[in-house]
Amino acid sequence: MISLLPPHSGPRFRARETAPAITDLNNLDALLLLLPISGKPDSRLPDAARWKSLHAQRKPDHGAVRLSTLGVEGQCVAGLAYCREDANAFEVLELAGKLIKQALALRPRATRIGVLAPGGGAARRRLWQEALCAAASAQAFALPSAKSIDKDAPAPAQLDQVLLFQAEATLDLRRCQAAADAGNLVRHLTALPPNVLDVAGYRRALGTLARRHGLRLRWHDEAKLRRLGAGAFLAVSQGNAARTAGIAQLSWRPRGRAKGTPDVTLVGKGILFDTGGTNLKPHRSMLDMHTDMAGSAVAVASLVALAQLKAPVAADAWLAITENNIGPRAYRPQDVVRAANGTTIQVIHTDAEGRMVLADTLALAARDKPRLIIDYATLTGACVYALTERMSGVFSNREALLPILGAAGTASGERVWGFPLPADFDSDIDSTIADVAQCAVDGKGDHILAARFLKRFVPDATPWVHVDLSSATRRGGLAHVPTEITGFGVRFTLSLLLDHKVQG
Image (tube, rainbow, N blue to C red; front, side, top):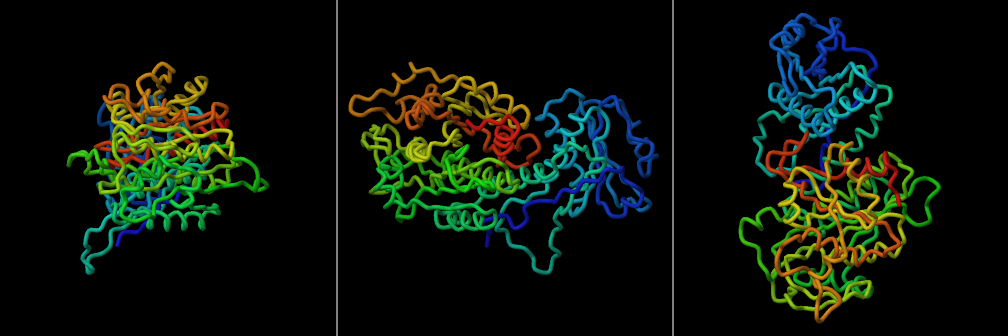
């Protein structure tokens, strides 16, 4: 049966300060070189004549990939790719993914590959080398599958090791590893069928992750949420056949920080399957709604990465975990419910359930007074229409954060676009019978209206970022990730918290 967590998280990265030697060719399935357009292969590379011939085929241009074989028996694939020197992180990741993909197509059973990106300044070498590692992990990672396998057939080999030659001294390989593993964790969880990743399955997976990484796990079930006044969450979960839904709270505390408020709280939408509820989705719109929990996967995987790195950041993750089902107890348009912070909500459309469960989760998480809250959600089609699936939308109650969010997206290769959050949009979700309407009747600007709605459940004193994950899935993959499920969000989050030091 399908495993709740990845049985193989991806290849391990190892760094070597030296260049590859001829003896390495006997132990590698591929040796891959990323060069600037103006560069050329080092004459000291093993089987230098083959590299020279490969380079001389035609004038280099950005994105070109050339393949050959090395060694006496040609058992090692030689891969050569060319990159503009001013290419941004997204472009470098995209090219690295292309190179790795083509090399692995020639050696699908590869277990060990070598990569190198020499030349240029330290910052560029670090960017290119990290991209090659990230691409190797993403390209080689197998999403969960329940396909039957011939027991007599040899099991397909998995890429176990990426050996980085001439590693840049400033490259943090532990960070590369944690980010790659966390991105693959997001992809695995998001790809799981809804009858595997049901509430009970998700709780088991979270329990395992908590034990592995030294996290504290607390589960707020429906009975407790009722006592806490979380009527918005419970309105969505009441349509479920079983009373299993709840909000998970996981905590990471670095050494010496066992007590005190979190520096950052990561909140994730975990709708395990979204039928649309009473406003039932049509077939094509419902087909992939097992991925509607991607926001929760990003939140927990980012927390795991922080723990894996033993980052000096006290962090919590709050995950709103339920389904949105149709049934005799399902909530309906024109219902009025009260959220945990006392706000009354007029229900307009039951397929806007994400903002309902997030409303209570944000309000409850805010009670711990974190220095920063970031929420992640596959929330609106309007954001997809605005940006496509190539980048995600971000909002904040601190306008000064928007350029920092954009910079973190650029640096990580997970691009984001900051949207405005003006107060006059509130008039579109005015209600005559409640404090606020859940959404507008039409869909114009729904990504902005959803953010305005969520803002009501975060105290004004708390800095808050909302990430509308329009990039959670994209047909054909995105950047270095080849699958429709992209794992978008972890790289962005780590850049924001660790590089840009945004913690309130």
